[in-house]
Length: 314
Image 1 (cartoon, rainbow, N blue to C red):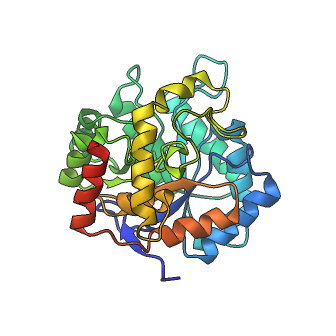
Image 2 (image 1 turned 30 degrees about the vertical axis):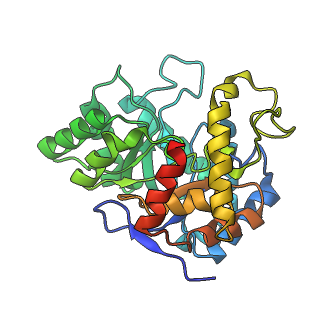
């Protein structure tokens, strides 16, 4: 395999592997031993960013990440998130000063580390002034508990307002945004992606395989296979429209003509998009980590990208 490619995280000095590792499967589809195997495989391949969140599997994901990186902390950048409700109390959610600071302390305990490399607000909180959130994050940076800050699921205007407040108040600024982005979900190309490029924020796509649809496991006219996210899941049905699955079949055929899978195409396509710093890919087995790293070696040309757009247009 080729050496891992590293990119700047936005305009920060932090260098991240173009393929990252998502932690949503840890504690749900991967136990402690399996999580350690996955993370160690990633580190061995040069993948240096592991992304988790305080709400992933009730905090178990953070605990397993912390155990897995013990002894290899200097090789890994740990990204986690705060903001989604994780308790029954009136302040157990959102991005208030109270919840952000207490959430950080709780994540540090679960991860068993002294510092979080990238601390992200998981979701925009319309009930809390952005100045309050950014001031709390700034205090965590100044205290050495957080190195960089980012956001997830923010709209372009929310990002811009955050950056304006940070500049006006001389606070730490967001270096990254984590949105849903893949071959089938391209909403961010309208406003968020150009905003990130203009203001120097790294884009960290999640759901790069469209929740598994871009693996080719779902077939038109057939029920979702057992053991998949779509099996007996009415909420998933909207993602499985016949025209979507037919487009995936066309993409799969195009990829196979070039000795690749549609999953490899999905990751390679993201890596070729402007503004992408690292791609969050969740796995349940070490072999999938190897496949994801190998996918990043496929360099798509402008001609390839035009052909892919034509295929998607039907």
